[in-house]
Image (cartoon, rainbow, N blue to C red; front, side):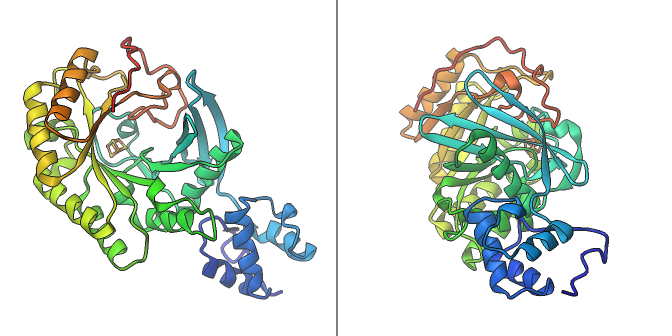
Amino acid sequence: MNYNPSIDGQKTTLLGLTRRELEQFAARAGQPVYRGRQLFEWLYRKCETDFSLMSDLPAEFRQRLHEMASASPLSIIRRAEALDGTIKLLLETLDGHKIEAVAIPEGERLTACLSSQAGCALDCRFCATARLGFKCNLTTGEIIAQLFALEAVNRRRMTNVVMMGMGEPLLNCEAVFKAVVLITEPTGIGLSHSHFTLSTVGWRPGIEALIKAVKSKSMPGVKLALSLNAAHDDQRKALMPAASRYTIDELLSAAKEYAQISDMPVSITYLLLAGENDALSDARMLAKLAHKYNLKVNLIEYNYIGDIYRRASSTRSEAFFLHLKNAGLIATLRTSRGTDIAAACGQLAGTNDNNNNDDDDDDNNRFE
Ligand code: SF4
């Protein structure tokens, strides 16, 4: 074997490579290309990242793998478990960036909420990740490694994946789209594409890239959740200054086009903030938009992060929800999960602190 793993002093991270790339890696390591297919099987089908246990590879090749490659690019720093069974992991990349990933159990369903970036360049006012600023885009391997870490600590496979953790997925399209392909590859991890949701604050160029990728069949269509949080542009600008570079109409028309091309559902997520966007007049405007673009609405509870916002009261949330239902929309009012370990929407800050939730509204009803 002439492969020199230390040309740049770096080991090759295998997680995140496609079957074809693993074949090329095997060839560069002086092995027959089918060894690459065996690696694909071990990594993605059997979810095995310990080279020593890849029993159908020759012992000598396994030894070489230890020297020149690493399977997973993340290590688990801390784990926290909420009273409702939600588990949050604090993970560290090889570059020392801290990110978080969350597993949310709900009956038979176990949903992995994955991060796409360390920190975030956008500045949504209600979000703990925004305070970190942007650190880096995560690689495909780092995205998939979060899934595997959650599966390892939960000792079971995830039934659903949502990219709603730290960062804006559509500002890291290349790595995220490749992760979608690998996670939904039927001969690999094999998650159904209809169980995968990409969430965006409405980065229109990213939605256009998504449309292009699905149109060209370079990735399967997945569900899209558009984090709108406002029913008119001025309100959205105050809550999400960077994301409001595009008007609500521009975003929703792009989302509608994506729904038509992918044949996958697109939903609006709307964080209910007391006195900001929870009035019935807001519900009326939101209902109009949802009807116009034929979108489902998910209302979500705000989780306090020590800022100026407060969760909408149960009474106002329910009135808002009922208005949408009475307007003939498909709508849900979601309960926050993992709030006691700061694992809920908007709370991920790469610290695993448990103390940024002192909101005393403990209403856990869920409406559909
Ligand atoms: S809500 Fe999402 S896009 Fe906005 S700052 Fe937080 S992580 Fe970034």
